[in-house]
Image (cartoon, rainbow, N blue to C red; front, side, top):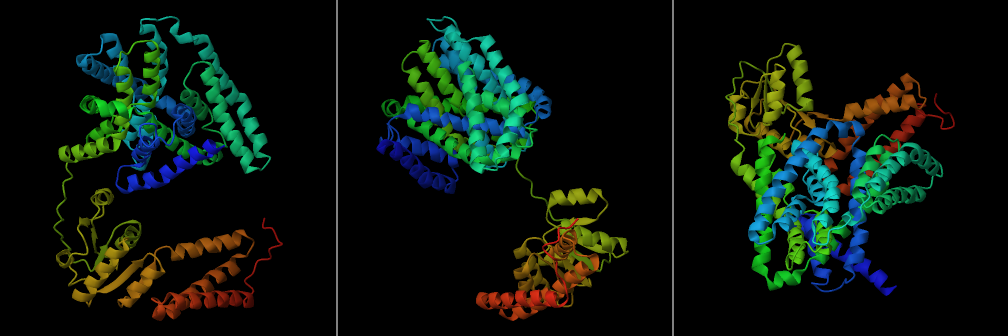
Length: 593
């Protein structure tokens, strides 16, 4: 019992201390877990010794991740991806496998063993790549979608690779007991279970209205399918992914995602920690130059091969090297392939220990590879700073600063009314878009004095400050007040604090960007709850008047939080009393139609 409690305490303490530190340093959570595993494992402080048992539990994290990925992919969408999955995936494995096999053969490994090692090293870590894509918000980019398609193919390709490895060894036999009929039967069983049994079972469990039972059933579902695949000598992750795809259109998809997400994150962390614990750091100590050369050479060769290969894949030029860095590390499946190769006596010493260590170290190098990929992308495809446009105000008497969702509505109404306007915005992508719709918009930072003068601020009558960023909004306000005191100003405010800051600068015409729309929504909510239209409209008007009066009362004390709270509480009670006196009330006992 002591060890049973000590191990999770050590794991959780390591995660809590090292993962936030790694993220703070810009290294990513994955490297934090790997470093933690090295520290507490047999080659570090030795706090955890039973690494193999923990690794088996940790594999469930990868299984849950693949199940949740499958939930996001509907079969139709997966069918649409077939070209990049099978075409791009085959090309990636072939090119990277051959390049890496040649490199390892040149380093001294026999040809057959080098081919197996090259194919195993061509695989990339689904767990690390997907985690890194999510942390860097790359999962919905073209590069992220292609990367995921290739990772999906690799997960499928790992199965025949595991089958073929025993056949290539000196003691080759019956493909490790693999039975194709049993494998096909397991896949068909997963389909039939999902097709005919899973939804009724989920519906039955959901009717209990017990959250913990639904969570337990969700875990049972994934682990049961994983076990079924294991019995057929198939990948647990592939079975979980297939189950997720088949349930992608289920009405219980969101509930399954919500219940399993915390377990996935925790167990993935355990997986990465177990990888760190399993690294043979003794070999790194005894032959550091060899291990470092092997690891760096492996990552560099794979990254270069991917960087050249991606030119024929649908990935933008600026994303090519980040894409290559994303897939440059080794895969969790490589550990399994090397284990099978060791049992088949295919890998001689010390390669049977050195190759898994290189894979583990390559995972640890992923954040560094991503930094190099980003730097290469910036060097090869530098962002060209756009020059500010030459502004031709053409007699416009209104300047609009900021042409986002608020500024565009103002501009359209003024334009339709025949009023000439000069528009300034510093988002080049937005400008190119709105110009296609016929608006004359100039690129420039409205908080620069020279650009305001060029825009005709000396002759203009009104400036509409529609800048979204509060600091820039206030900076423009100060600039106009100092240099163009004659210019009337109509300002957009994000919230009440922003209103007070503008009022303290002498601005009188202020509109909160969401206030009027929120009032309309509140009015509709009252009507949906059974209040008649006239009373709901009265409620909206009285609330608006009361809110403005409250702001006037708070403004003299807006930097005194205690006074603000006191006035706001009193105003809330006064509003409720005003509503009661005017008969603005809904009978809670009456259910609206």
